[in-house]
Length: 54
Image (cartoon, rainbow, N blue to C red; front, side, top):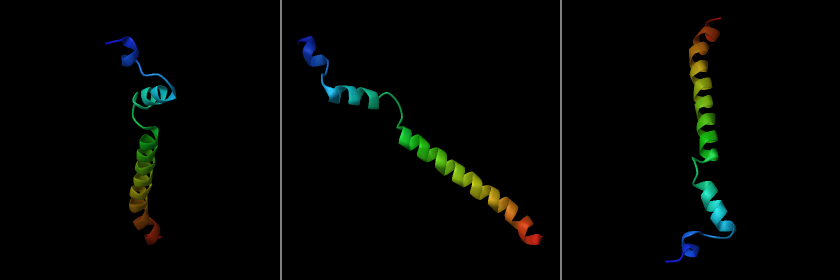
């Protein structure tokens, strides 16, 4: 086996290496946005009875 076959070359190789280094940023941002929306909704559920009573 030669070492040339073990190391991929070209632009595809750098894209594959960078994408497999960690979790997807899109997924992380989506989870943060979902958590923020859930926290706002939970806060509204707490405040709403006091707001209606006024």
